[in-house]
Image (cartoon, rainbow, N blue to C red):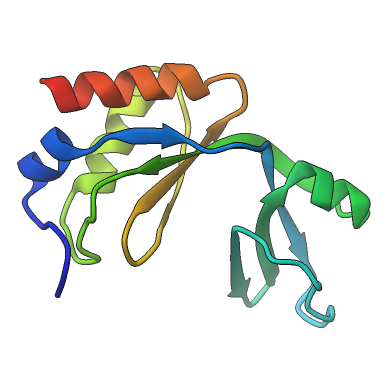
Length: 131
């Protein structure tokens, strides 16, 4: 398995980068034909397919959406089986009254935080890595 598993090293070595764009979460019914877009993420559930995509794309497609948010990428290659990394981050953000929707890719973890709170989240993450 590749990637870092040591929780203290993950926290200490992470850096956070704010990505451009205002993202939203949208869903389409299970029987709906897949959208011809390239979302940041697509996840199929029994209840429908969830898309994380730019707000402008959702609006141009006429999709209802929720949770306008900003995407922060954690620039540390965390192992997919790393224990407690996202839990520690979510707990720290919760202490600052901030919800987060994390998505783990093969190489990096990405945090979708409420629009307008992205700089607060970046400050929390920086503080965590400096401790």
